[in-house]
Image (cartoon, rainbow, N blue to C red; front, top):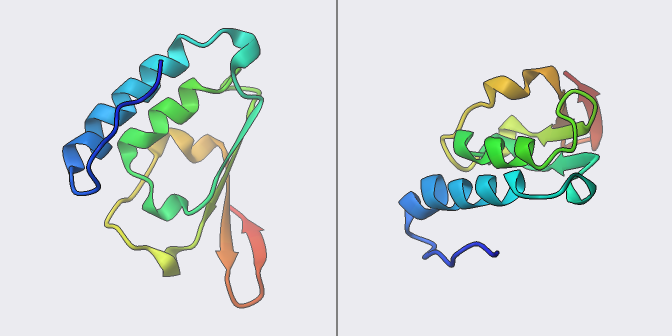
Length: 103
């Protein structure tokens, strides 16, 4: 099963259709195909609906690693949040020194 193709301008596809397809795909994965860890870069531009498929792809949400990198100074889209992701480790990057600081 693969995800459908979407037009770059089709916000409904990117915001609802694709995350739903990816969530269904992740739910159907056998445990041995799920991820022990996921790295999300540019998280400041992630839509709320994109987080659920990421979380569903983890083998064990309580034990798997979800490493989230965000730089609020590079925000392109008005997307804020992943309230369920607050229990995971966030890194806020300082682009000037390329140093990460845990949140």
